[in-house]
Length: 173
Image 1 (cartoon, rainbow, N blue to C red):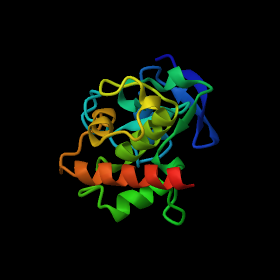
Image 2: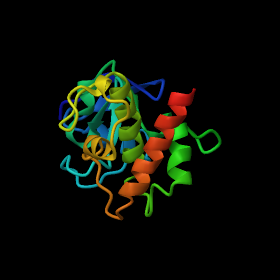
Image 3: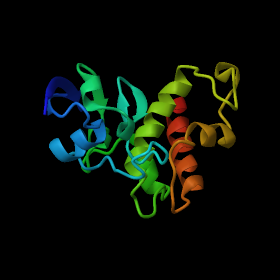
Image 4: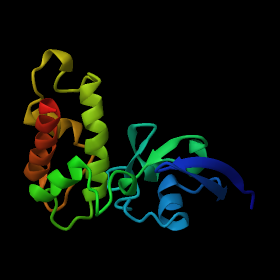
């Protein structure tokens, strides 16, 4: 079997991929790098449990091959914060009970982190075309933007509350 190689920047550290060119980014992160915060949910790109950020944009890592990311900056949940130093979104998820079983939480947090940047950059959505003209996104807007991340426990209102808290704290900063 032919192998390929690439260098990926994972959470600020250069990591070598050497292996089967068919290996997904998700499996490389979990199996090779032992970064098990990123979860394998459906393995079909439908649930969002495997969401990571590549060059600041959120993707489903189960649908992307590791070899495709030579030179890219990959951020997983382990790169967002640590138990000793949680990121603001992580603290908000804890304070608002934005999780129940916790399986989807890493993907939700990665997605929310990227989504907040998308909002700040004025990206349009199916709900609001001119985000810059809107004083604050509605709950409907936030739900639409987070719709690629499923929570089987149904903690959606708490997730939206956590995101809103971070947005309000950033406005006051």
